[in-house]
Amino acid sequence: MKNFHGFRNKVAVITGAGNGIGRDLAQQMASYGTRLALADINQDGLEKTVASLENPSQVTTYVVDVSDLTAYQQFVKQVVSDHSQVDIVINNAAIIHLHSIEDGDYEDYKKTMDINFYGVLYGCKEFLPYLKKSPEAWIANINSADGLIGLRNYSSYASSKFAVRGFTDSLRVELRDTNINVSSVHPAGVKTNISNTVVASDNAKDSVKKMKRAMEAMTSEEAAKVIIKGMARKQKRILVGIDAQILDKLVRLFPVSMDGFYARFT
Image 1: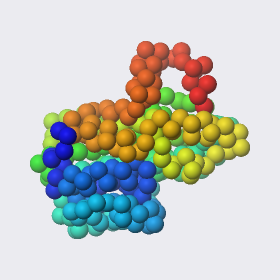
Image 2 (image 1 turned 135 degrees about the vertical axis):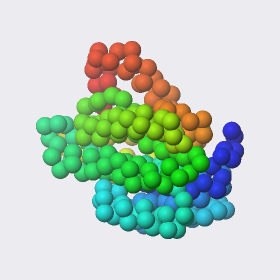
Image 3 (image 1 turned 30 degrees about the vertical axis):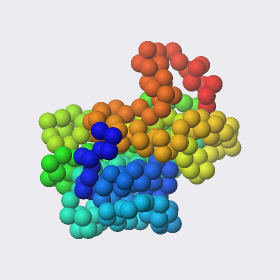
């Protein structure tokens, strides 16, 4: 299990691969001999990711807006043309808008859903015919601890992540008797650059500070190791970090009585 030889010579598609967890997933997958199709909206980030890889067997990069269905379909065609197969899809691309429900614009909700939810939907649905051709395949949808709980100022982000959670659960049931393993991944406090790209309303600035403090709990390298290990073990739900594990237990034990507890952290 330690070297994850089952991923050798597989083709892995990773979105949001230009930084953070996506970059570390690419680095570790490359070390296992996985062939990589890396996507991000940021060309510079992709180039830095490729430059960080040690002895990659085969890597291709694609600048893609995952919220654009037409662009995504073209991306899928190009990946299949370049690699002839797809065995692993890791839907990682996401954004965060922090705002109260009162202050948030409808556009904040739409953009967040377009990238965080529809980007995952497109990744699963468009690659599904090719994954079915693989002897063994994996889908890992990178969700969040905010796909387990709803917090102050996180309504657009949490809504998108709850949608991803429900979608992934349904997908897993539908693919239960197939060759495709489906995992819902829930990181909590992971140190990535996403905190520096958060769009926040004036009344949500304090939530950004608290988020940055929470993100010191685990490095993105450590998170990627947990995710890949969970995929190799075919785990249906991968909880990344002790904080995610605690939150999951609290949600299960006290589903409607934890508002005061949650409020202290956002």
